[in-house]
Image 1 (cartoon, rainbow, N blue to C red):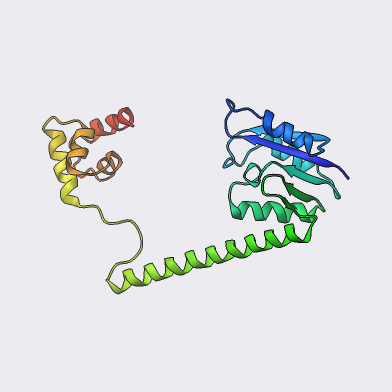
Image 2: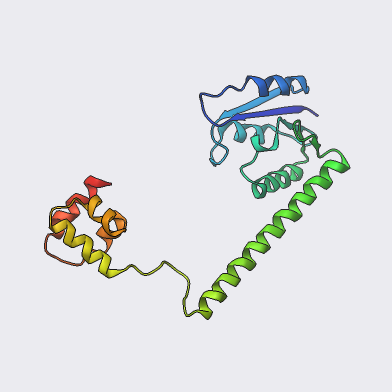
Length: 196
C-alpha cells in the first residue's frame, strides 16, 4: 500500500517544484510528472503512473485539474482507478475517496455531469425542432453564390484573394471551394497553396 504522486504543468517553461514539494509533504514515496497540456491524450508521466499503481495504492494529486481534462474525463479516470482498487486524494480540494464524504462528492459530480449531458441533448433537440418549424434543417448554412461571384470578380480585377474575400465577407477556403469558372482554375489552384 503506497502513496504515489502525480504532478503536471501545462508547458515546459513552468515549474513542477511546488507540486512535487506538496506531494512529498503528503507522504508520496514515488512521484510521476508531465510537462504537457491536460487536453492532450498522450501524457507519458500519466501513462507511467497508471501502469505503476497497484491495488491498495493511493494516487495523490495537488488538485483535480492536474489529473483530468474535464469533469467527464475525471469521472472516467476515477472509475478506472476504482476498478484497479486504487484510491484518490486531492490536496487542494481536500477530496479523499477513502472516506465516505469523498466518495459522495464524486457521486454528486457524476450526477451533475449526467444532468449537463441530458440538458445539452434537450437543448439540441429543441433547436432542431424550432428550425424545422421555421422550414430549416440542420447543417451548414448555404453560401451566398452572389458573394462568391463578387469575390471572383474582384480577384479578376486585381485584388488579392484575401482582399476580395474580406470585401465581400467570405473566407478564403470558401472562395476556392466554390470557384465556379474553369478559366484560370489552374492558376487559382496554384495560389491556394501559397496563401494558406
